[in-house]
Length: 151
Image (cartoon, rainbow, N blue to C red; front, side, top):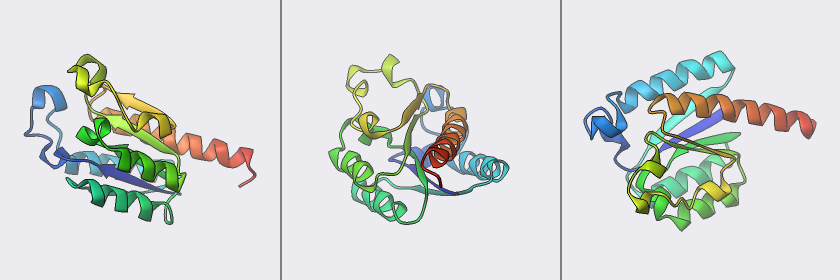
């Protein structure tokens, strides 16, 4: 099984950017943890980060042909990007939406997600550990759905 992790805008600054909100762990540390957890779970994890909406759409479209699921932190694009939402819907891959902070406890403009309606689940507010929760849930979902359809 292969899982694509996609980190959205400004997540390359993790560890420095507003650590009181996003924590002190760097993106590299998160990706290393996910890679190790992936091995434990019997899957390969591929991570990418982009500050550009179109590039994220391209990553999702490419993932549709190469992996079995997507772990996505769309960051600020959560609240603005119909294009990312449509790409997820188009590829039809199980996708888990991740947010380091609890977006529902923050500014009101962060409360709406264009991504949630096309995701199988949403993990918010657990910091970097949310990625690990999301990966476990995604792998479990893919395996259970595979059993249902005889894969």
